[in-house]
Amino acid sequence: MYNILSIQGMQWGDEGKGKITDFYSKKSDIIVRSNGGNNAGHSVVRNGIRYALQLLPSGILNPKAVNIIADGTVVSLSGLLEEIERIEKQGIKDFNLLISTRASIVMPYHQQLDKAKEIVLGKSKIGTTGKGIGPCYSDKAARLGLRIGNLIDKEYLKKRLEEVLPIKNIELKAFGIEEYTVEKMMEYFNDLTEKLLKKAKIIDTSNYLYNAIKEGKKILFEGAQGAMLSIDFGTYPYVTSSCALASAIPMNAGVPAETIKTDAIVGILKAYTTRVGEGPFPSEILDENANLIREKGHEYGTVTGRPRRIGWLDIAQVNFVVKISGVKHFSLMLTDVLSVVDEINICTGYELDGKVIDYYPANLSDLYKVKPIFISMKSWKEDISKVKKFEDLPKECQEYILKVEELTGGKVTLVSVGPDETETIVREELF
Ligand code: GDP
Ligand code: IMO
Ligand code: MG
Image (cartoon, rainbow, N blue to C red; front, side, top):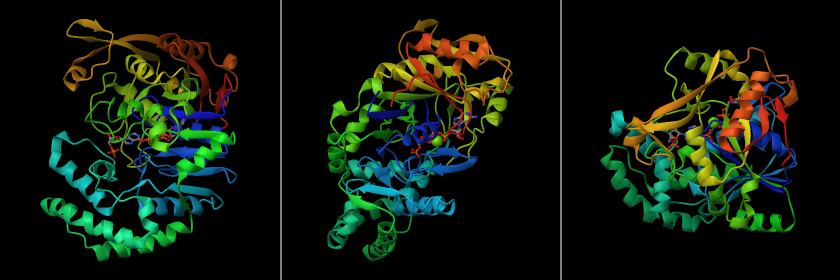
């Protein structure tokens, strides 16, 4: 049993991180989001009500827990306020939210530049969520960013805008986007900061976590996106602009590396694979099975509503992620959905130029060429969503889960059989 648990997406996002974070959040004192922004869309379903969370940690439904938006995130003020308004309308009014002074601000022009760059890329577009994530992280690295802490020092905020806007305006002009004045931006910030401070506290969250760890608090780190969307190890350039691996949490939340124990990472693994946006997808399903899975799994983007591309479980890819992250525990998600197909394929490896390879190609040109090697298993036809014990699952389903364990060398500690928090089979308690 661990006091600190991390949730990591094992594929291209949308694996069900929101559901599992909510599931564990009832046992948590603190839930932390440390990468990405409102490009994430994490669904939580409780009592049949669906909550779509983007930047808010998926522990927000628990009034006793403290929810942290940490240093490595990118925060759209208007996006966050809209999200808060949305959950408040759904009756979630009692929550504790802390935002790091060091988190980056997604400026209105970041969103405009994100969309403009996609248009220029044309056929080569990334298929971003259009939330300004890439331009915001670019400005952070270029030291042209603004941080949440700047909001509470008006004088410095103005000075910072005077430094940054002349440079950004050159770029905006080149894209035919209207330039910003310091006055207009100050007005924007004054209005939104006042609203935000009524809902959240801006503090040094790294320091808060330092004390919480010392006091032995139970902490849940909620990853956003998935390992294969990570800037360094994903299918670059068809990735997001942050690192989605649990190993990035210490850097993104300002906690010591030893805080994240490899054994205490739960790899969130969809029983098949999905991807939104462009990029290579070796195990993509191109026949009718894709539609069957898409409809049964409601595989449409939470943020953009785009239909998700569907593929078979790709163990070659999962094992690459296991190699770079050390993940040993999995939560196998949307297992119930596979009952719509007769036969389930699993990609166990790749062939490149006629040879079986034992590595995951780093170059896109190779990844577009690989031929997946499949094994086939029988599906089950029963509705498994009400099953509570592994032993009560249909034999074929049990075999599928055991096969995943055999092929990855990991343990499937949770089996998710439906979107609701109650539709979860616990095989081993970790937290
Ligand atoms: P996240 O981004 O990783 O949090 O995942 P999303 O919320 O974007 O997408 C996962 C989708 O699957 C959501 O609609 C969830 O409600 C749903 N979901 C999660 N687990 C299960 C499951 O075991 N079965 C089914 N049928 N749906 C699930
Ligand atoms: P969650 O946390 C799925 C994808 C986008 C696009 C690429 C870059 O819900 O799993 P960006 O807007 O980040 O610059 O887009 O990354 N993407 C996601 N796909 N789930 C996500 O988050 C994603 N966040 C970004 O579709 O292909
Ligand atoms: Mg999602």
